[in-house]
Amino acid sequence: MRISRATARWGRAGLRKIGVVAVGAVLVGLMPATAMADDADPRAGLGAGWLDAQQASQGLELLAHRDKPEGFYQASNPGNSSYANSDMAFSGKYAFVGNFTGFNIYDVSTPSNPVLATSVVCPGGQGDLSVYGNLLFMSVEETRGRIDCGTQGASGTVNPDRFRGVRVFDVSDISKPVQVAAVQTCRGSHTHTLVTSKNDPDNVYVYVQGTASVRSGSELAGCANTAATDPNTAQWRIEVIKVPVAAPQNAAIVSTPRLFTDPETGAINGLQNAPQAPRHPSGSSWSPSPVTTHCHDITAYPEIGLAAGACAGNGLLIDISDPANPKRLDAVTDPNFAYWHSATFNNDGTKVIFTDEWGGGSGARCRVTDEPSWGADAIFDIVDGKLKFRSYYKLPVPQTNQENCVAHNGSLVPVPGRDIMVQAWYQGGVSVFDFTDSANPQEIAYFDRGPVSDSSLLLGGFWSAYYYNGHVYGSEIARGFDAFTLTPSEHLDQAEIDAAATATFDRFNTQQQPRVTWPASFPLVRAYYAQALRTGTLKKATADNVRKFVDRAERFADGPQKNAAVAQLRAVSHQLDTSVGAQATLAKALNDLADALSLKA
Image (cartoon, helix red, strand yellow):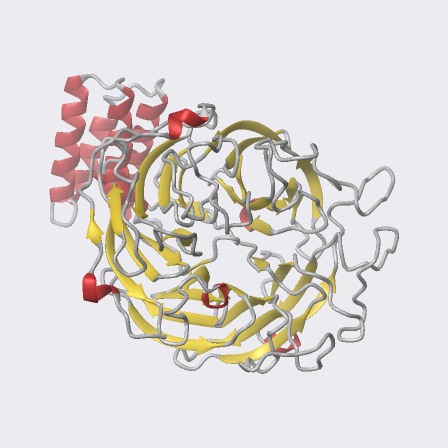
């Protein structure tokens, strides 16, 4: 995002809930703007309120909400960006929630009852977090940030106490995080990305994306706000920090890759240096301006050696096989994009979703007059190492002038056999959509609240919405922290929800994307069964037999008839037509489960 303590509580008045209405998923990729207007959608016209806004949902149930703790909000101005909640990271049973004035750690071992474990006041914005082992990384870009986390700020153009860069905390004692390193950078850290390598297990690399002004060289040696003709300029680059895991106090910048360089001329400003048109397609001024002097966000997928960079005026595909020296493979542009903001791979590493933060996150950009290609997701396939555009996806219901709304941070929902993403849209709420067909994304679930104010636009809504170990969690800018569960619908079977929950991680940083794998299990078999049914290719007798045999095998699996369970699974797998993709996948899952059971002691 780019945006320059009272005792009130949700529990006092509660949220006014609008009844859930079963509405169909909306295909928005190439639809005209008028198609966004749907008076039947219960999200339209939700009542406003900081503490008692109306809410609507379908397929996504709110389990719990926690207000921001004391010291992390301003009751007289709930939209004050100095207290905005920002990005999240997860480790074990903990959710780490960033804030422009520090961070909060919640115990989410019981998702329906998150418990605040620790609050750390450490101002400096934007407060994006990542976690690795016992280390917590925090982005700091504002000039008020101090090395000592003090709240008094750092006045003047040059201040030796100022901190802008990446903080490193030791969180081995979750109740007492201790700052063990603070790596200064010239433009601060708007966001950062952790990159790991199997060939270098002793170190973790941090890609620093700085978007703010360049600080004075008198404050930090080597900083230069100069033209692209200066090979030492602090613009047109990222920084790479190498962090020895066993000695994080030795963290230091080891390279400053020039990812935008023209390979023929050597010019470091070799990508988009001006908007493709004088004005945004809406007729308004560009906001922000899509000029590629920096990356806003980079998502690394170490397992496949690739990263996707959202870099203001361009989307990049990057080789990270050598983490300290990333190399650009491809770059794309889009005349509709105001600001390439973030990126997400699908699990196979064959697609990338880029987001456009038109308006910088503080503007109303989901109005009925805003085209679905503005402030949206752009879905690309990766074909022979190149990014190929397929479609747009935008929140399919209009929001008001009082709601900042545009595409923002999300993650995959690990439903096997499908590409599904949950995404934050600020005051547009949370949207879950299927992009298995790159050209035809469809919304399958959502949650939304009314605006913070009914008379003016106050900054609020979901900064990020991520899936972690069976649940969705949301960082709500003005209101706090939310926990959700997916619920079955015509678009998502309970078996698919159960199978997604079997894919678990010890930690999760959305910009350090992990490969998802699913253990052989009855939920996995049932998920693929549901998908085979959905294709309409299963004969009724075969479908009935699969269901009957799988149920019987599960009853037998943990008792003396385990061998019979194995036989049941193998027998029914032979009844499937493996020339049909969905049935072949189901057959493999049945046999994999049989193999797993046969090896079970």
